Amino acid sequence: MLRASLIVNARAGKGAAMSAAGIAAQIFVASGIDTTIVVPVSEAEAALASEEAVGDGVDVVVACGGDGTVHTVLQAIAQTSTIFGVIPTGTGDDNARTLGIPLGAPAAAAKLMIERLPNPRTIDLAQVTLPGGEQRWYLGVLSTGFDSSVNERANQLRWPRGQSRYLLGILGELRTFAPLPYRVTVDGTSYVDTAMLVSIGNGISYGGGMRVCPNAIIDDGQLDITWLHELSKATFLRVFPSVYKGTHIANPAVEVLRGKAITVEAAGQVAYADGERLGPLPVQVQVVPAALRVLAP
Image (cartoon, rainbow, N blue to C red; front, side, top):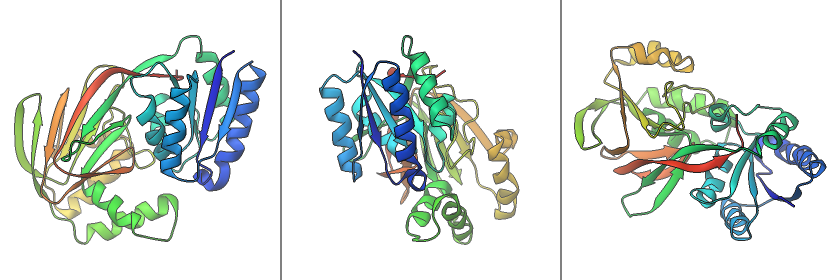
């Protein structure tokens, strides 16, 4: 009998994750899968539960939560034979968007996973090496510059929650942010210029649907780099909303690069990936083809 473990972030979706996990578990059990629901109380416990599931030979490990839960669970599953699944219940759920998993519909997401079990999809992941040598995996987008500064600011706010907090972070950062000198090395070729932001996408979007790397493909063995060069704040405000449609890349100030191994350097900046804080630049990012088996279309 196949075994599945649902790693649930009970805080995700204002408590919706618990209900979603129950719905998914019922569908899994009805399909003959021995299913366990695990509810960690911290990120460290979620990481440990994921590692234990992989070590115990569980066939399918499902992240039931938002992009942060996906990011945590990925660290244990990457480059193993364990199959990965997602029940999206977070604020942004950008990785679920990239994978084509239904949002706000746990029964549909669970049924899709059951349908895909005989033939999981194999996708790439990106691996980040931080200055101290620590390595992290991500599925979606790594961001630095304006957007990571917004995350830094938003994470310091106690109120409001969810997307509103991110929007307040944007408004606050617009008052103080200035373009920064960057060095980006792509497959051995270095590019030096100022930037508002530099994002590296294995997936397409972040921030709840901002398609910053709209042409990224998660199984092509490449990473997409979106480099927004220096703009006036007035122009930036005009360009920024177009990121939701992915049409910002048509702007002359936006440069799109592609590669397999990227180094990003900028003084005083930090990197976020899948919405999670990784640490200060410089970082090295490389694509790892076929690093994950996932239950997705």
